[in-house]
Image (cartoon, rainbow, N blue to C red):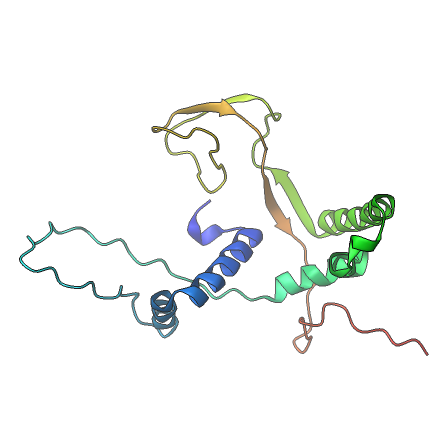
Length: 194
């Protein structure tokens, strides 16, 4: 998967990671601001070394283009999970006072609702078709965004190992359209019984 073809969840993960990285790194924040203002992403100047030999010229890689992600789709998904699975109610509930049996019963309902939302609004397929535990060989140039190497990762491809998780990828997204004036930040309206 290329950088310009990140999945929805890949974009959400990138947005969240970038958000926290910007909060913790003043130079990164300044660079992102320059990008959003249409300027290049120039690194902060490094302190000059006294009488250091000049480094050999290195071809600079093009600065990655950061796209601003709209949170509407993520908020829409949260709203659907709340509507059909009471997901946020479940996560926000203090479950310390409940028994494991009570939590298990609630989790079953939340699981069924979440599964229904995913199946209605997404087509999700495994990244790898082989069964977990199957032995595979990853040739040089394998898609590192779709396959994460774990364990004793040494050397270079080809890699030989066992599939411990097949992974997931979204092939199709079918989120409902929203009206222009819709406030997506209200993922579940307050209820007032009369």
